[in-house]
Image (cartoon, rainbow over the protein chains, first blue to last red):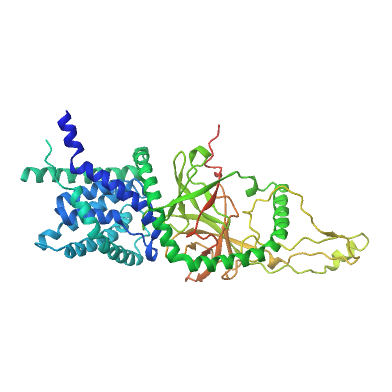
Amino acid sequence: MSIRFIRFISSRWTRLVLVASVVLGFQTTIFDDLRPFGVMVQVMVLFAACAGVVYGAEIGAVSGLIIGLMYDCVLTTPLGLASLVLGATAFIAGAFPYFVRDSSWWNKAIAVAVASAIGEILFPIAQALVGLGGWVQWRVISVALVVAIFNLLLAPLLMPVVRWTLKETLVG
Amino acid sequence: MSAISARRKRAIALLSLTSIILVTLDLQGSGSASVLRGTFGVFFRPIEGVTRVVTRPVSNAWHGITHYNAVTKENDLLREKIAQQEGAAVAAAASVRLSQELLALNGLPTLAGINSVSAQVIGDSPSNYSQSVEINQGGDSGIKVGMPVMNAAGLIGKITKVFPRRSIVMLITDPEYALSVKVINNPESASPINDPEASASTSSTTTTTTTIPKPQVTSNIPGFTPGTTTMPLTTVNVTVSVPSLTPTLTVPSNGALPVRETGILEGRGPSRVPIVRFIDSAQRFGTILPGAPIVTSGGSLSLAPPDIVVGTVSKVTDRLGTAGPILEINLVADLTNLSFVRILLYQPITEQVKP
């Protein structure tokens, strides 16, 4: 029982939930306030994309789904929508290691930026699919561009955090 | 390794399925989604609170750098506006009070009779694809889903989610927002007329001319007195001058009466102004000119009571046939800078639960 509990506490997924809570705290406070060019910088999307780029499609997708579910709890869109979108974003980002072997940090940052832009475009499309129309506009392109640029700058800072968070532990 | 991979694939499938089920449940209005959000909120609010305290200096520095000039300019502008409006406010108070008395005398509903709750905006939606704000009053204060929310200027949105001590307000600019409104075509000013019959009939009696202050606006819409202002119950001095013997009767000519037409207001996101559709292109209504006021239409099915100021027409796009024009709206409320709002505890007759 105790071994199982320690294994649960020290697992990468528990760490992911705790770290994602802090990142979500930043998302709903400082990044909600700043809004450069009228666009909110999406650190939750960044977190999911980093997970995909660093640990591949499978771990990335699971991480994205968990991060998205947490993000869903503070959004007004239907619960589960951000989860699907961030899961897909992380999965797309996870394809990066298949294409680039021995990638450098800036390669990864570019991959994160591209995945973030795709994720940001996927969100209004997903909203439209569940009947919340009206968000698929030309503005989406500019939003995706701004998010991609800021995530490109923030990715090198968040990548080590993601690497530590999702590091596999050998407890038990 | 393959076993781990299979397990992860199962986890992905399970989580995706869970997400799809949650989306379905939430869209059906199931209470489980609210329970999950509420439970998460219990754990997350303290973390958010700490993060807010830690990051506040950074936010303040950012706003100091980026908005300093704009705030200084805005302050100067506001000082000038206050000076202009102080004089007009006294006359406006009188006319609004008179209007409310007249409505009450005729048994017509007024906004003065609707209770309201004041609230503070405590957060925006943390998304680029949602136009909503969070306020610090909820079900405990009597707030219910659908109630209209306004600030000092006019309507800003409606309540879409209610928690015990907080609520979510969907703003007018959200593409999901729709509300029946009426367009009031600017009336021509009433002109005094000398009716010969009236002159004949009143020649033997004393005629009294009552001078009522010219209606002033509480918003910046010319020619329209909104019903949104709730006046305090104080005595209003109305100047009554006893006159000359010349019979003078001020009657608005038929064409000068305000003509109203209803339509549906729809939000279109933060980068585009809301529009009003389904306006009847009837001859009687005449040409809609930019500047015509838009107010809520009310009615037994509408979520908002009548005569809350929404905005003014900024652009009219005519369409062929009977489609009617599309009106672009300049909102009177500044949705980018909301701090205090008022929730009208109003429910249409069709929504009220009988005891």
